[in-house]
Length: 162
Image 1 (cartoon, one colour):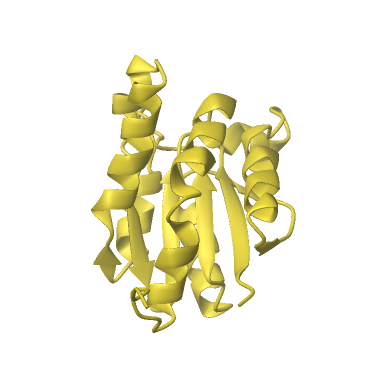
Image 2: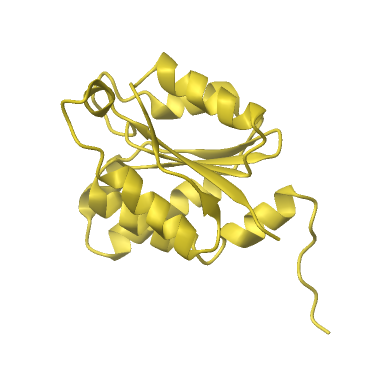
């Protein structure tokens, strides 16, 4: 089955054109390599514009949304809060997996990511850090389980041994 994905970069500076979005394209490439249909990243300012972009993705019935940026501790890092306003159910193991992967690969600041993951209607939403390394590590961490998660959200069952 083919799944549609959308990458949303949450960055007020990139949305204003004063900063280049470099992590969004990394996530797009990673998802395309996994076989998902994905277009260029959508770049929005932190806060309410991200909330609106998430709601639009759910309304568009996109299977997967991966955000990058806005997961840190600065006053404008609001990606987890905006995501919580959209999702119906959390999927904490996915967010924990991303942080654990960073720690296992020598990135002690991975624990500072407040990213979450969850399901909004039939859309899986996962928050990744905005750094290039965090984006790469996030895709690497998710790649072994992502397709199975999407299958389950679509009503698929666990594979059974024959």
